[in-house]
Length: 136
Image (cartoon, rainbow, N blue to C red):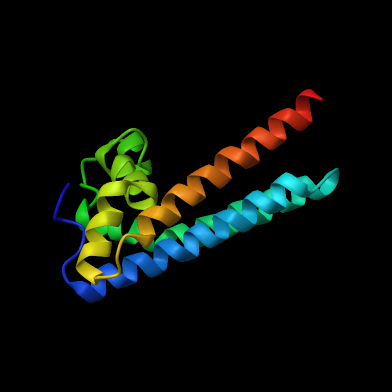
């Protein structure tokens, strides 16, 4: 998958913008779901799913351009389950390789990789907090 993600510098910058919107939405979603209680958790969950779906659309459109769905695709392939398209979407959302490639092409340094690690650490911390809260 190396070298196929970005056609030029502007494309890499747009990818990083789309990714930052998704990550910011994800952090707000973690906060909302971690700190809400009672019926508000259900409402927050529905809102979070809708917002994350909307924020992930640009990445899904990028996947559609790179690996279009074939007319003979099975139902699972068309929905993106356990396929190359699914792996590519996950790679674009939080994989090191495309982030490094876009950072290099956009000449923005390694701060995007650092931010990726911060996002993953925040995710782990939020899940740990919820698990500890559930157990105690």
